[in-house]
Length: 301
Image (cartoon, rainbow, N blue to C red):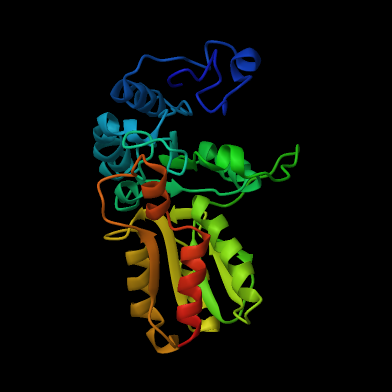
């Protein structure tokens, strides 16, 4: 359920064909009312239905924060497990499409900080299908973040058959030995490009795709850092208080003795939101050249 998810298949066509296949009882176009979209989905989940509300753009999620953080995240805990919340909230997020102030926001940190919510951030079509199936089957509330630029930019094989991927398990997209690069979403692809670029200079970067922010796969992160001795974290969200800060603290606490250089973050700057002008948006985004430059500096230690 959500704005234009039925007849139009969503603004990004992600739900195209579902109305024809499953009918109006299961695929519901809603008014522009995010508090109601998530609130109704929450009530349905309380009654045992597996609700999948969509927020058309991450920038529109704020009216539903009480339903998500204030209620969905706390209900199972508050009822001592008596009431489960099988709800998956799909949210297109992020910049890079010239969406400006109100169609480009990164919202993941707000949910990452909230116990009781699972937060999933796939970056490939294969991962998106496997993780979405797992999210819908989960009896806990899941915030399923889809970087909107990857809808058209990223291609990949997706099996027709049944498969799922575990929530809470990172994936090493590129093995390496000199430095660990941790990222998620669209920025993960920039990390892979940067790793390929610096490989010709003798820097062998291992790229870890978190895939899930909460629960965080600490074991994979720590194991990689213990092998390489260096850590770079990249994400599009603001640098202060971001996912990278928590990962940096984790490694400083539990793998400090393995580090051969400083922990480096390549993240969005601390400005209120993504600029609209192309030159400013490009300056904001942690892209391939910025990440490659940081890898060169880190490898020099």
